[in-house]
Length: 106
Image (cartoon, rainbow, N blue to C red; front, side, top):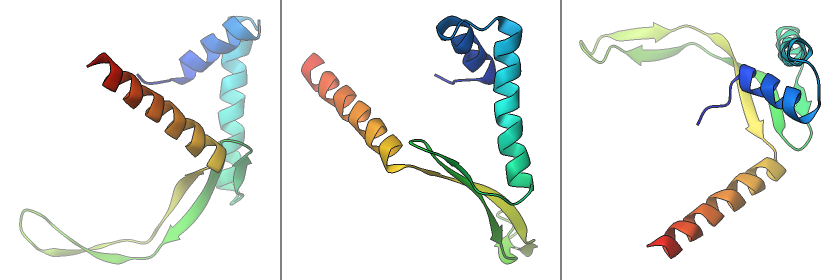
């Protein structure tokens, strides 16, 4: 299953009681703040969730898989996400419960 921005807006509508327009605007504003902060070079820290940050990757050699020709891959800036220990623990706990459930269903 995939969680989309529209799904997040629907959850805000259902759980918080915002109207649909307010919920959609809040989700858009949230992600716009993250985008703006990253564009300005800031680290975005969401407690209990994780950190978004920019990383500069240097130019490096690459290879065309069809021809084998060496092609330089240009330097670029990328966004990285590192999950918090809390998020990792929750995901692992959920995964372990699902694995246990599958074993008992067999």
